[in-house]
Length: 438
Image (cartoon, rainbow, N blue to C red; front, side, top):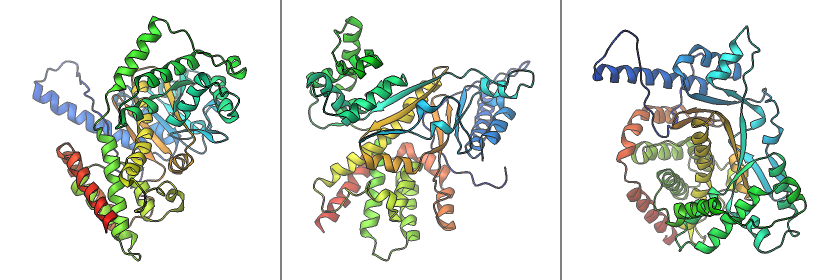
């Protein structure tokens, strides 16, 4: 594979794999050593898949190491690859509403043990059955408008929404309103039980609708049975208590504040190299975790990249409620990670490949996420490993900052569990407030 630099991928969750060697018995210490060796080798192979140049190379790596990759599945996005029967998964726009995935699903090559074995079997058909399901994560703004169709009878006022809903039914996509529920839980004010349960019932009613019902605008609430009522109650209870701290979200919030502080404190003629050094030192020494998508986005912001400035546009010193705007911006990025988490959980616990797409009418969010889609993603039991098209190695960083980033990868991993994110968050909030007053 040549002398490629291996980036440090963020790993979420953990897994423990057993090793059995016929004819031998090992004490627990020896088994633990073997397990670490196995895990290390497995991780190295997964990194090689993430760094593969094309689907053919990824397939060869998977096949060569097939016994190491039990339960592993991968999606390789490649411009030269065309997935069969994938038109229903394509990114689409319906006026002000958009559906967009974590990558270009029409150019997604799927790999698993069964698929690879079938493709490499010279005596077989070269194909394995691939089960796919499509799910759309409805943003809060879409959920609210969908609910209005049932409760406010304004079904003739939003043709864009009607076209979107028709498409969802046409491609037989599942729907989830998890973004709405989590935003409710994040809301600092008291969550309205009546409104939330009305929204949940509206979503259930939409799930029951057929294509022709949507076409004829028959948005009628179902009469919930015992199972429906139980589901609504369980969903309500799950999100009725406000969410205090979620590590992923807090890390994104902290990162956004820090990059803003660096930019505001830098003189107009400050070099990108120096600003990058400040950010990487902060990630290494204080935050102790590297989130590739958000870090690359932050670095492009420091470079004044025109494609991301609109997304950061509301983060201005003179803006009212600036810290709330930081939280809202962090929440938008967190939702994208939440969607990948949902994919990982479902793919790792089922025989199907689940493709999730986000539905929103936030143009800036779509633009910034489409700016840097996933290039590779590997699902490994309870976690995933991802590589984005733009990463810290290909956006113009100088060699000294690349070395600074790579040198402390092990230290970051060891220290992250000891970091007090609440204290770090408070510290940066105080620095933002000081900037506002100055």
